[in-house]
Image 1 (cartoon, rainbow, N blue to C red):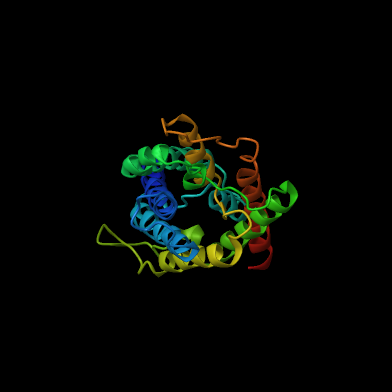
Image 2: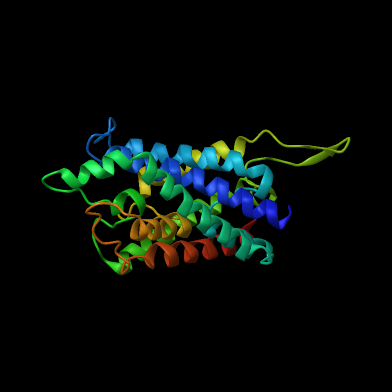
Amino acid sequence: MSNGDIFTGEVIGTAILILFGAGVCAAVTLNHSKAKSAGWIVVAFGWGFGVMAGAYTAAPLSGAHLNPAVTVGVAVDTGDWDKVPLYILGQLVGAVIGAVLTWALYYAQFAANADEKTALPTLGVFSTVPEIRNPVANLVTEIIATAALVLPLLAFGQVDGIGIGPVTEAGGTVVLGSGISVLLVAFLVVGIGLSLGGPTGYAINPARDLGPRLAHALLPIPNKGTSDWGYAWIPVVGPLIGAVLAGLVFNAAF
């Protein structure tokens, strides 16, 4: 994989992931959306399908990490850190792009929100907000939830390229595997959302939270309220710690 392919794949794949994920949050949160109040199960499946769409798209180019925690977990397991900054840069850029696209898609709903008697908070469309603000508890939640993502993902064969299976050469043509691992990862993310997402909204991905939070701060969203930068370190540090732990466990046990 060339540097250009890695960066392009991570930008495109992460943008698709955030477009689906932030999009489902907007759909169930904002007034005048046909999916208003559709519920947590819809949110969990929306994020899972976002992972599936983004990963299938990016896999041939970059292996589709789409998540700095995944990139770090793989590096801890393999000892290969050379491409880590490039992966993370692409993921952050893609996350910002995906958030901006979500804002554009729901532009009318965001504008209508400003006209409501009680404007709805909009940060939750873009980034995670804990139900109970307790830094220690919130950090532990993100550590455990991210380890529950990265450890199974490594076992699915992430180090060989997420979800594309074995890559072989046949007459000069690259032949990809069946891709079943992408579907497994998508359902894994749905499961994490349903089982572990209640306390913090399961960032489990520093780029997923930081990129859209930055977009929220910069975009001209009416009555958008605070971007809550005081909490922003938790969905970055927690997933990175969880990824390191998962990588160490996988390296030691498998």
